[in-house]
Picture (cartoon, rainbow over the protein chains, first blue to last red):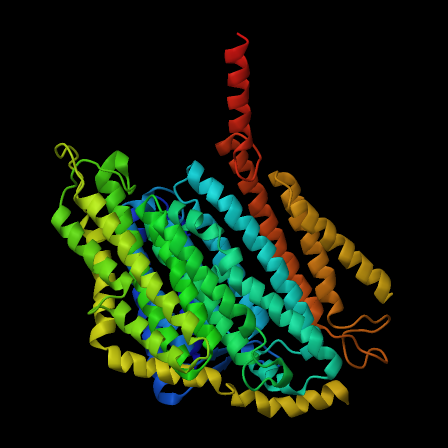
Length: 508
Length: 122
């Protein structure tokens, strides 16, 4: 059983999703909810068990169908992948609890689609094969296409048209890049590619370079890097609240792929190909932060504001990718955990505020006072403090780690102002947002809408996650550091055993 | 053979990108389809082009790389699913937004213009 642990985070949501499509669940939302929560709790347990196993026994390679790498597809789970797998399961549970308060009844197949999306995300984190990464990208995308228009409506359809077309174009570029890389490397196994980068023939190097940079375009699109980020605010603000919360981890899949491919495969060991993407990532990361700041300052509603804060956090993470040192990766990883949880909480909170404010929705206009303003205000305050990066919550620790890791970088003079200005801008817009929504009120309360206890508990759960990140900051950052060291070391010893045999066959 | 093949891939992807940059959903979908054809041909060529060689060792003097064929098969299946989805979505957008512009705006402006004309020339 323990030897099959690595595949469980992919298998559980897959089987769970199929199970919930069975006829017995059609007319029984209660049955659906209970089984969905059971499945995702099982998933969380499996992910934590996997992380614990990887932490104590070292990185695991799982050969699918027992076809040995580099010939077969393998899963490769190190601490980085396992940590993100746990994060995904956690966010899934929070979105689901929120969805169970009524959002799941707005359309069909909400729970199975969430499962399929999480299957894609987990697969993308766990796989060790770059074509398999593409396949899991498509799995998570096609589920997200359907989830984005969950409930229907003009706004959602319009946002989805852009989102789908852009991502289909992105998939085509992904395949072009994979074709080029397979043509030059003769393999799609990431560990195998990493071992071969330094030994490419001279006339293949330029091809491999173009393949790697095409991949940068693709991952830039997924993670919303500057010229490719225009889809994000519309898509995230149109999506239902619980789906937007789950989407907050999707940009991180792009960041993770950049880490794996551009800092792993084309990392320091890659000879002439070493760090080829870095000169591109750094300026675009800075511009992403700048564009995010400008867009955040001009946001008209809480959802769009949160989506723009996602862009700012993506820019900060891209800076950490560009610095590419163990400290920067550690800091980036910690900040990734924090920003995913904090933005998910903010999206859920925006959903609650829309429900309570009636016509004014989450726009920054004066309206009638909301019910339970003190409770919501407190939650908003906690979310805002952690998103801005003020002490004592996790945003502060994440940003402090990032600033510290940038000290050794030669671009210090660009990185510090960008991160600090982003915090300042977030502080300005979030305080304006909070004071408009909760204080600029007129008239009497009319609506009797209140927060559903499930909605409340999902937000509290996420905030507990943020507080957990602070309380256990030391051990979590130590884990992140080990994960970063794993990533930057040549990461799969098992494939090297087969490498020599493979090379002989290919050239013999 | 390489030259003809390269020209085919180039033409298909060029036409695909041209159509993808159009403003109506139908040409965009056609563009995506052409692009996926180009991708499939390109992937197929990544295992090097060869004639009269089987993908099984020992069946012919030279053997072809079987992996690109498996990759193309996967890409075709995924491409079909995605094209089907985007077609349905485009029809839905046509119904929801009342037009087939990718930004959903054109008809709105068109209606406005009509209204202005009507107001001026009753």
